[in-house]
Length: 248
Ligand SMILES: NC(=O)c1ccc(NCc2ccccc2N2CCOCC2)nc1
Image (cartoon, rainbow, N blue to C red):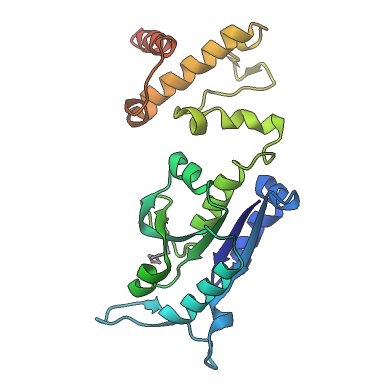
């Protein structure tokens, strides 16, 4: 059971990930748990203040060390020992499948979703194990990135993916390649037919066709991924065939 605690001023944003799809089913099956903690509930003043103006001036507000720190400590006390505290921010380490697999090793994850212009740096130094970014773009808060982490990790929990979905585990994530094309009925759409190899029952030919397509598409669209990946003798041959077919 992988336990998530999400610190957020908008807990209603997180609930959908616990109610539907693979993640909702993972919660139902006790493969994961997701709790939200709102720093406003730990604010001691009458106005339940969680932010304040930035030292040094400038626009926007900064989340204060307290009550955010108290919320983190309370939430962490409910997580298993060895849980990691993750801060979602544009300044974080870029999330990729390798990091997803690293994070999956933790018994619990405390995900801190920032708002405003960010959080007082001293709280990060004091409480955060790792800053994580889901990509080089700016969002209004860390809640969507937190749900991305929950989704990517839930899929790795044994039993989360039915046999029908476990195929999707074999593509990009596991092999470091982009996925091969997918087809279903009808056989012809606007005069475009399904590749004949897929209509036959030659499973070895189908496996090779899919591997070749995955290699070719990775070569075409994400050469950076290919650069990082050793190719087996078979993969090298299939990719060379793909490239030769491209030049016509
Ligand atoms: N790429 C990501 O993972 C990502 C994550 C969060 C995020 N936003 C919340 C946030 C969190 C921390 C610091 C600043 C901010 N921002 C607040 C709004 O202003 C911009 C900075 N944006 C993108």
